[in-house]
Image (cartoon, rainbow, N blue to C red; front, side, top):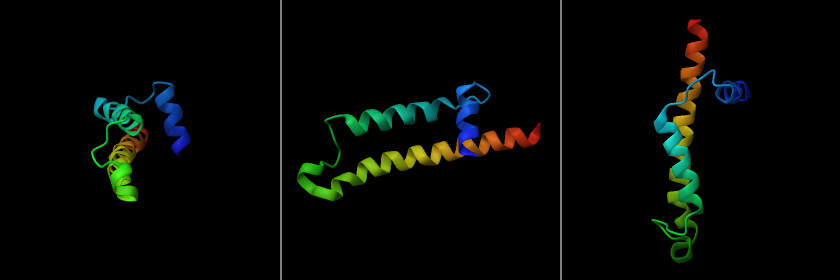
Length: 76
């Protein structure tokens, strides 16, 4: 089902909310940016908590988009 959803997004059959796009871009930038809220260098594994949190937010938004797409399919 996830691959069908991704194909629908790629084919522009489903319009992803702007907040989801912003969160996706922010997650990628934050992960690779040298600036960190909780630096891994100082706090070790605990420093990954903020990175995991950002990706967790993105996962929730992505799941919401997938559910919205499924409800659109069911209504047609």
